[in-house]
Amino acid sequence: MRHVLSAIVQNVPGVLAHISGMLASRGYNIDSLAVGETEDPNLSRMTFVFVGDDRVLEQVRKQLEKIVTVVRVEDISSQNHVERDLMLIKVKAATGGQRSEVRELVEIFRGRIVDVGEGEVMIEISGRENKVQAFIERMRPFGISELVRSGRIAMVRSTASKGDEPDDVRR
Image (tube, rainbow, N blue to C red; front, side):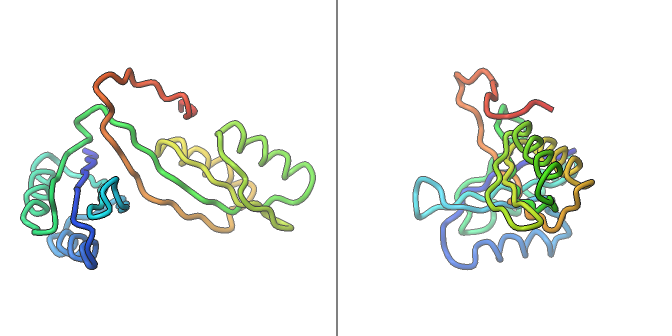
């Protein structure tokens, strides 16, 4: 089972290394990890994605809660939430028909071309993991020169939210 945990931590040097090292030393594999400042500059949010049963989820949660710099841990995978992944990808695209085809796919996936070189373009795509993965598969025939992903970030929806995702292509 796939789990998404959100941890609010003190924004201090070494907290990322401490937490990821602790999880690795106990044999937990992190599928995705994203860290960034919150609305409070003294706090950061760490979003973890990992696979395991409910027992593994409880163990990871307990281990995180023991760390002094961890303020709060929440399992958001069991709640109504929005999850996003950001990717930059360089794709081979010669001038002409091939570049037009890439541009058309970028528009369909609601991405942006953020850099253009002689023989390749750099594209920014964000969305659910399956959308990003589908875009990667569409780009493979053109030739992917380089790819980098941010890892998942997630936030629990407001109680009044109806679950609409107008900025995303449903896949």
